[in-house]
Image 1 (cartoon, rainbow, N blue to C red):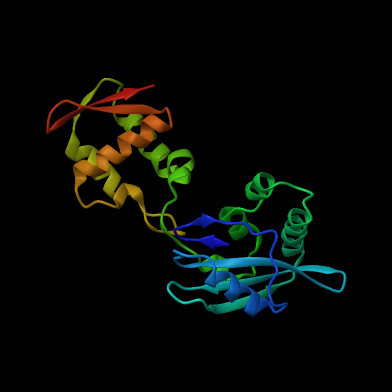
Image 2 (tube, helix red, strand yellow):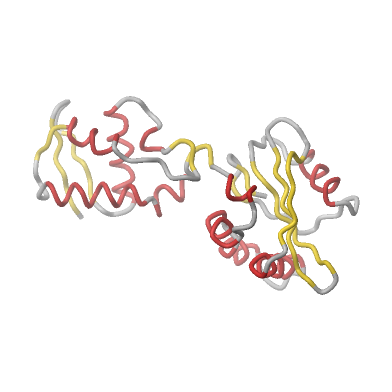
Length: 211
């Protein structure tokens, strides 16, 4: 299950009604605090390994859209999930292989997966893999030497120029309309990525420190 708010959830010891749609909605009834998302379930058709994909919306325990994906790439994902169900691989292993990013890249036939968007960029992804953080840091280093004092308005303008990722509705860097708060978020991200730091001198000036 890929959920905007809950993230990624895996269910192994699952026993339902034997019907894909009924099984999915049975699981939705028992998964509280859901947002918008989709489920992937591995199934077989004779000797073929395929995937069922079902999309759900908030506040109702119903699948609003479903697909069967049966190409070669879907077969790879299906086999991985069956291996997890058979306890041949761990949840940690399957969670590394089956991410929303990999699904979007691999399962190109699924419109449900292509349409999926996070409400806000997941915390781990933002702090560890955000390309905007690296782009802003690179732009800062190209324009200013380490230790240079710059006006906060110049940095705020650089942040305002970024465009949110296609699979995210709200980018954390743009989540606040207050330019100063955006800089604080950027500073925290730079420090967590070990790229540098923004030292606030006063309400108008800041100093760029590169690690």
